[in-house]
Length: 107
Length: 157
Image 1 (cartoon, chains in turn orange, purple):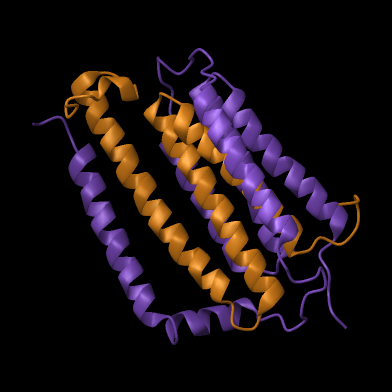
Image 2: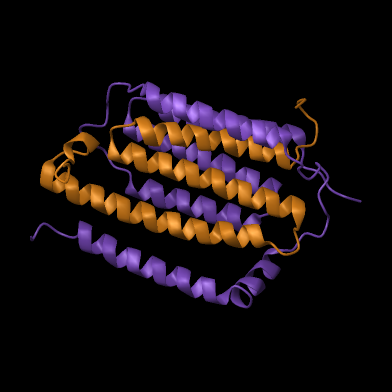
């Protein structure tokens, strides 16, 4: 892509693929539960961007992608809220947020 | 007359988004990482504005304030850098596959249709056509709220 040329759906999708990969890397490699949650938020962000961009370029009148993005934001807000509450509860019991400390169900 | 997305604005916002994500993953302080995540989400709100989704941009900024509310100082905030090579290889493979698919796919051109609905249309459709998903979403939020309060509430147990 030359800098300054009008951006199309492909550019938006490439951007969100890069963002999603970065989030995937973070979610897989971090050992801190809060960092994992933030990486998940990054991935959700990339997906929403994809939805909105494709909706804008294909059928802007129906706004389907925007509605999907709104509902996906609702779900990720619920996920972040519950996730942080769980992390708080675990922190209170174990005094740590390391994922390696949470191995009680390990077989 | 079709519209286009301003390439320079897109480039700057894309740079801000990816740069924020990279900084979020490379910083060793969890609180700094949260602020880089905020920067990334702010840049994404700008991208939504480029795509004529004003409502989503504002919702994004609201989410940002919510995350800011949950931030606070922690003693174990500074941590050594964790490279996680396996995760890096997997994520790089995934990203390469996605980029290849995008490059080879038949995608709509850079010129986009002009008919842009306003936020008024968005609200009207949200409460008519999308009313049932809307109600289900509010139920999900309610349950999540109750669950979060239940788990994080008080030290009495």
